[in-house]
Image (cartoon, rainbow, N blue to C red; front, side):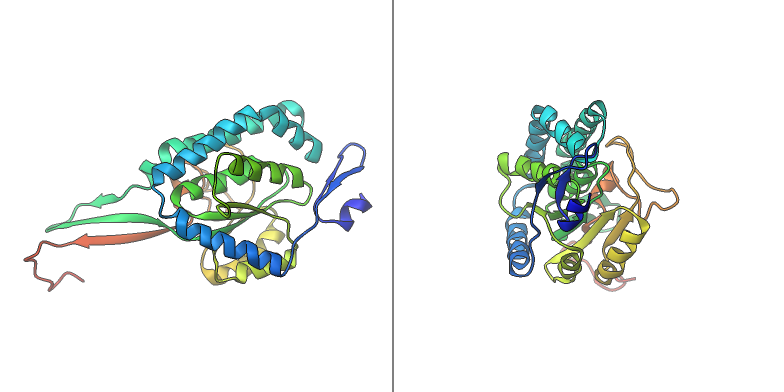
Length: 284
């Protein structure tokens, strides 16, 4: 295990302790280039129709099912989960993506309000580039419940996975690339804790999400809270159509179901008045 500590991103056989593969972390100018790419990608991604974005997420779900055995064996190799449980996690992760591919456009649709004179409605708009800091225990599921709804909504995501799951992390990024996701829409990051702080401080990044320990959550929340958008949760397992939240240590706790579309969204009120409407009293 001493070999693992030399490189923060390494596949170490959980049964033998043998280091099987290592992946170098990026820093400095390389990280800046990734941030710039993600920011540019957001400008184009948000302009695509939500149906097109949802279709891409749906294709990822389909490809994930096709590669189920490969992905499951990576999970077992890196964090020791029984192969039967790893296969179950792949199925669950694919179901989350498929759920948002199907229901996401309706969840994000404008919401009409009952008003006198003219019309009013709420619109849901993406925020921008988001950072997700993910745990080791559910290498696929924890990521997709953050990435899936946000990509449908029009955000772009940067994912910093746990150090012991580098190949699972890369395999997820490959899934998005192989179904045609533009560069910068979904990006895996091998970065140090110091670089995470710098990424959060970047004006490109508009929100951060962490699933992990209270200690790790405190570090990220202290930094990301300055932006006003950070959700911290302990890991949990559930079905995509069931909301998660309302328990001790659950942080904001609005994940999955329709609520999964409302974590990192800019909700705006739009009021349309008749041409001859008087403006007095509208603000009240």
